[in-house]
Image (cartoon, rainbow, N blue to C red; front, side, top):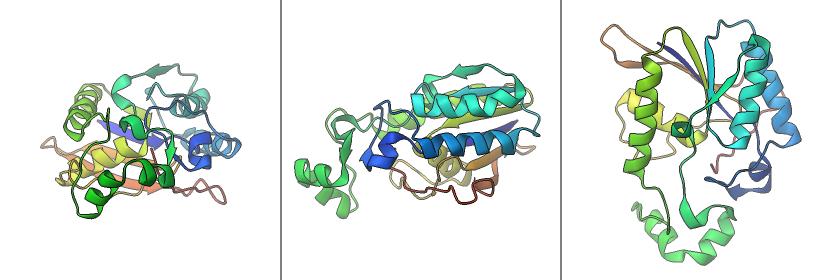
Length: 208
C-alpha cells in the first residue's frame, strides 16, 4: 500500500478565516495555484487512482492532481472533514462570543462538543474504515482530503489518540503526506507536510 495524502488548496473559507467543517467553500485563486503546483509535483509519480473528499475545495484540488494522469476523481464521503456542527462557518471571534463555555473548557484541556458536532469517536471510525478499504487496493492511491483527516491518520500511525489531542500534526494547504505499510501491516509515515513544490505559495492556517 502506498497512500499519498494531499490537503486541499487554500479555500475561500481559509482565506476568510472561518472554521469550515462541512461548509462547502471552493478554492481561492491562491488555492488554485497551489493545486496546479501539486499536480505538477505529482505528475511524474505513478498514480493508480485519485480519491477525494466530496467537499468542493478538495474535489477541485483532486482534479488538478488527476489531470496529468488522465484519471477520473472518485469522491469518498469517508474523507470529508470533521463536522464541527453549529460552529461551522464562524470565525474564531464569533465562536468565542457564541460559545464561551465551550472555549473555556478547551482551555482547561477538556473537549466538549459544539451543538451538532460529529464527535471524535465517530470521525475516527469513519476515516479508518475508509483507509482500511484503500489499503486493499493495489498500487498508489492519492487521497485529497483535509487537515483533520490527515492529522488523524498520522496520529494513528504513531499510536497517538487523536480523539483527545487533535491538531498535533500541522498540515499546510496542498502539502503532501505519504503513508505506507510495513511487512507487519503497521502504518509508516514516509513523509509529512511536504511543501517543497509550493515555493512562495505556502499557507498553513488550518481551521478545517
